[in-house]
Image 1 (spheres, rainbow, N blue to C red):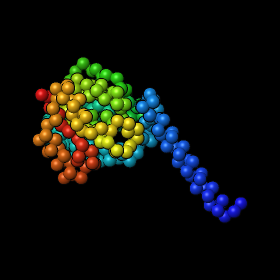
Image 2: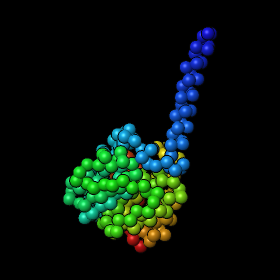
Image 3: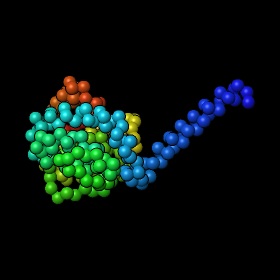
Length: 225
């Protein structure tokens, strides 16, 4: 075998492996009807993105409690319960749902969480003084966007805090990255308006604390019309 062949073979093998990984990642998606359990495994919840969430949750929850004094909190798409834990420790009724059982297994007590596929309507027959949905909507197929927003609004009593990755933001199964105006339109249909002042205050706090980009730039507070 020539020197050039010996050099080319490993490069070609790496390219083949990379292409195979990208293909596997593409098809292992809710866009093709796969369940959250099949997409979000233990490695997803133990990875770097959730390390940021752990660091962020204490600051965010302190701000939200100081600002809104919620008695009860629903976190729709709660991950492994980072926010729920701090709300529960502060004495709030803290409830969450998550699509993958691996996330539910990691939710700490005394928070309460259950597995639920957010492509379907969520109906708990009660409202919560604060309802959150943070960095979830971009993982939901586009044809379930309105269903998700309806689920959020259905359970909201006073305040909604919502964020979703904008177009071109990379991430695991980011199949529904939309501009903020798209989500504003869906919330407006449900009678919930983006509160410009409260959103600005939350984003300013997030910048001052050095929180992740989604809290600094694309999280919004909604109030009932």
